[in-house]
Image (tube, rainbow, N blue to C red):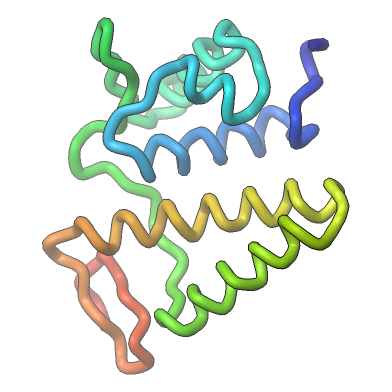
Length: 141
């Protein structure tokens, strides 16, 4: 695989953001799992994680366990109602099973962002609900 080859054909910036969202959506993840997810080399994962750390993202490495984000760190979530999120997941499933790769990769990336935000909202003790039913981890309506 070449230095720019991956399943999604992502550029580095997009992959860094997607990696951040992947870290946010999982308690702990190994470099091998990240590499498999993006179809990149483990060495590239190490460089990406180092770049995130250099940019101020508090990536925690536990030898023999994996990587995680410092407890309490999160990227601001996208706000969807339960119905909107459900509709997006259903649409995503249709795209994954009924279209070609040119639409599947962007849809998979978008759904990863939604799942990541949903996980933060489910586990956050300070999550609140707005008037339209959307949840926010910031505690504001």
